[in-house]
Length: 93
Image 1 (cartoon, helix red, strand yellow):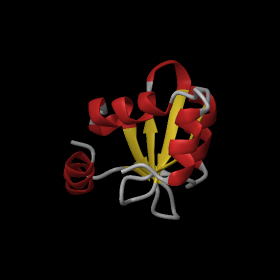
Image 2 (cartoon, one colour; image 1 turned 30 degrees about the vertical axis):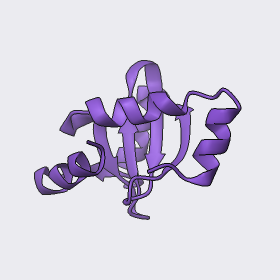
Image 3 (tube, helix red, strand yellow; image 1 turned 60 degrees about the vertical axis):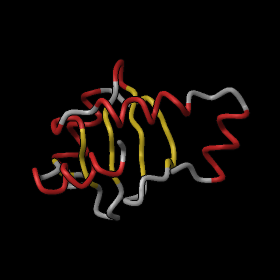
């Protein structure tokens, strides 16, 4: 499901479709959850996408693996569980 914001960004030529493709192709090790209950999907070449739990794209950005690992250490995100990943996959079929 795309938010109004993501539709606008897509119309501006931003790589919104890449975010949804990355989410559909993600393995469990690529998906994390933030304390605000948003998904973080790590894509190729440092791409990172933030989605609401209902599947709406919030934003996409580039983040180094080092910065990602720092967020994990600080508790700003955590790995997704198997059960949570099954739900995630249903939302991004």
